[in-house]
Each structure stands twice: as C-alpha cells, then as structure tokens.
Image 1 (cartoon, rainbow over the protein chains, first blue to last red):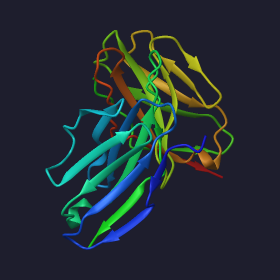
Image 2 (image 1 turned 135 degrees about the vertical axis):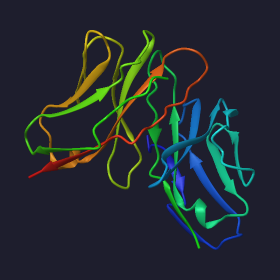
Image 3 (image 1 turned 90 degrees about the horizontal axis):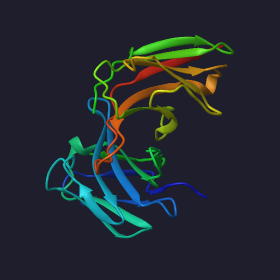
Length: 115
Length: 112
C-alpha cells in the first residue's frame, strides 16, 4: 500500500487566498483525521471523520476552515480566506479501528506558508 | 484522558538501549498507554501500546509499572535513525471518542 497520500507537499500563498489541501487515506480505513502542527502549539487535531461523516470538529480554529470527505478515498481541508497565522504543517492520518488499537497512519504532511 | 509528563529531551549513545520514561499518575483502569514518534519533517509513527502487561514488538518494548502510574519505552539498540520526538499518550479505549491528544513529547537524540 502507498500509505496516506497528501497533496501538495508544499504550498505558498498570499494572505486572503483560498487554500485547499488534499488527502487520500489508506484503502479500507474507516477513520480520517486532520492535524495541524506549529512550533508554538504542537500537534493539534482539527477534525476527524468516521465512514465519511464528520464526528468531531471542535479543533477547527474558526469558520475560515472547512473539511469534507465526499467518499472513502478522498478528503479536503480548505482555508478561505487564508491568513499568515495559518502557516503550519498540516497532516492527514487514517485508521482502521480494531480492538484496542488506535494506530493512526500519518501522511507526509503539507507545509503551508501564507505571506 | 489522563495527562502525561515526559522529560523534554534525552540523549543516548548509538547501540545502547534508550529508556524513555512517561508519568501518568492519574491514569484510570480502562485507559491505554500509546507511544508514537515523529522523525524530523515526517508525520508521527505508531510504536506500541499497552494496558497493564508489558508489551514488545519489532520496534520497542513497553514496560508499565504495576500501579500503572508510569511507563518506560525501551529501544533496545538505538540507532541514529531513532533520533525523534517520542510522544506518550494515554487514552480511554472505549466509547465514541477516537481522538489522540499529543503533548510536547521527549526529543531523543542518538549520538554516534
């Protein structure tokens, strides 16, 4: 399996522009997570889905952020409009719940820079 | 989920065992201990998890004290590639809450 795939790997945009990050989870996994990592705040969970349905979006910082999962093999995280403080590495992870295991498989991340 | 405390950094010589401690004194009976690591510029990677018994896999061993208030992750023969931030996470195994909360972790530096 190719693992979790994220695109783009790097994104540089200007303040006010719309940014869309993409994620393809591991085939067969039923959970998908979006995280954001910064030096100041560490690794934060933004939102997660189960069977394509958003379960908990309490970590989404504000209305400028939205996430969708139209099918089991694709998810997007959109920021509109973007601001410099959104600069971070955004990770997508997927998981298949099995017993006590909460093994999440992370993608390589998208490094977002908003100027 | 119970709070965890880890040292911010540790050093280890290449080829020696790396023992990473984690304190989770408020852990409850149905909470598991999970370990993840994050190598620089990569996404976190699952290492191991356990409830009360010691666990071992191809990557590491997890030793949980009898009172479950602390645990130690052991990398038996550390290599330079094991340099990473190691996260100890405690979470409830049941219910519908499927979140993992990452703290600051321990930066392990393996020296040649």
